[in-house]
Image (cartoon, rainbow, N blue to C red):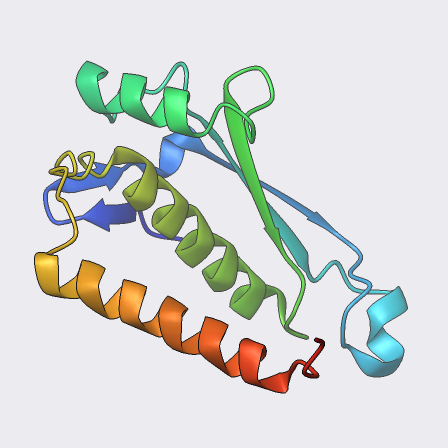
Length: 140
């Protein structure tokens, strides 16, 4: 397989990717018990030289729950063919890493409800209260 492209300008060389294959529990007909169509792709994020230190630290922080000793592993077994499962695993790993190294969103600016929004909310509360009041029986 070819090197894994995370985004333009950021490529993980094939040497840093480890593949493992096993029997899949997914689709495969009679051949499911004999072929190793499930693909597991592992990437040693902690010891990688492909990522700059800043991006590596961000990814390690964001993917901390998915890592085992600094290694990120994804598996694919939804296809019958091993090649398609390999492609699916590569796409999944690329998407995970792209999300993990993305810059954080800009901080939210605190805003207040507008005067009109406050008035509409209070008017709706008053209307609901009057509706419920009208449903009550007259007790004297």
